[in-house]
Image (tube, rainbow, N blue to C red; front, side, top):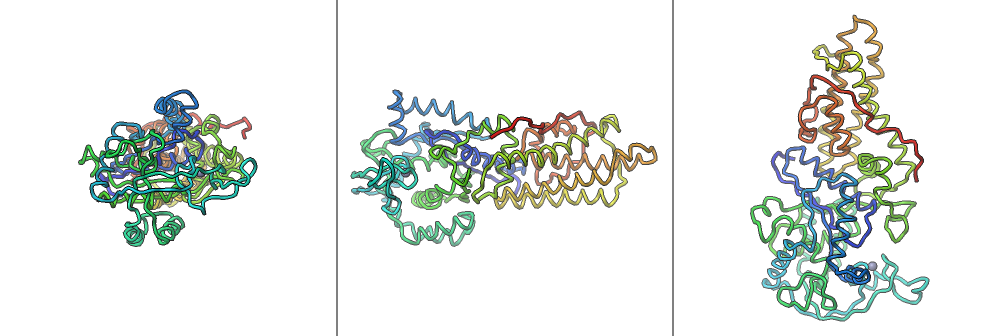
Length: 520
Ligand SMILES: [Zn+2]
């Protein structure tokens, strides 16, 4: 991470018809944490999120609800998707909708460019289409239906029958990019991460790529194909372009070249769209491919993937109403190895809240500040007489700052937080062994008391800076109670340990109050 460099990070744009569940919030929090971290490292960080609003399924539900598809999308953006960002404290720099004029106009420019360069041709397509997935299915993607669909072939993801469609389509010559894609995966092993996802993508492309049908003429809710307005652009082709239209493609070359390429955080179920189709589209347009495509795992509840159709969908507000947005962010980023599947349970959330946030971090902050208030009238002591125990804390601050930054550069968010927590644990042990309450009893121990409280306060300052991307609300409160100057979010995270303390502390309310209610 170098100062002033650009770090453009995206979430997938969410299908506006879906109901936000903790899986969506998980992706948002991961991307937001990385953006906040890079911003605090002095980089030009830019977080993009938004909504995917075209396609047949949205047209159908809007019609069923007696409104136009745009009215339907407007309603869901305002009542479901923008509120989700507030619920989990996302600090996005932009929110793009695929119905925005800036998107539609510049997506058309992109398409026209590919057409003029000979990457698009007219063909006939016949295949099984799943409206739920908005994609044609290969026979291997279908399974035998059960229940009311017995005897029919159904989509393996949606368990619903597919439709046999036959249409004249425009096709993108994706097959011609297979060799260039394989060379990309080979030359840049970080392009697709984690490793299991990369291997899967490579073996998929090695089987050979088909050309991609990129238009539909059976309905009209979408971006018009610029040279044939009886067709609309295939919804995935349209949606992927959000990452460049939001960055200024087609209208602000200076901004586009500054931001692009991006790091894409996606669920592993949509990895192929991002790691195969998307870079092929960009290659065809002569644009740089993304910096990195990271496929995170699924959240499992009771062993099943989170989804509303499986009745395991949990609204993020169910968690934040009780535990707060900081606890949501901490729990999912800490408890699950980023990139792997992870199980959510109320019991685990409750246990980690109590032991790690309330007792581990929150209580440490409250105790240290309360002792500075009680023994020093709130004035942070100044001292230079340090022992080996004090120096060990200082060394840990420097070590975990470096280790956490290194983990973040690999997108190993859980490792970064675990590194920082070594400092939480060491400071707690330090307070226990140094016994400042004992030192306070004897005026002869005054210098030693000052050194212990100074060391503890400085350690808390380092924690506030390092944990600010993870638990921003708590760290803002802590920073202010420590008398830190300016905003904690303006402190350099790659030099978190440099902070040497303010002059006064002020009393601190519990950062993570005890939760009495039983939940779940
Ligand atoms: Zn499906």
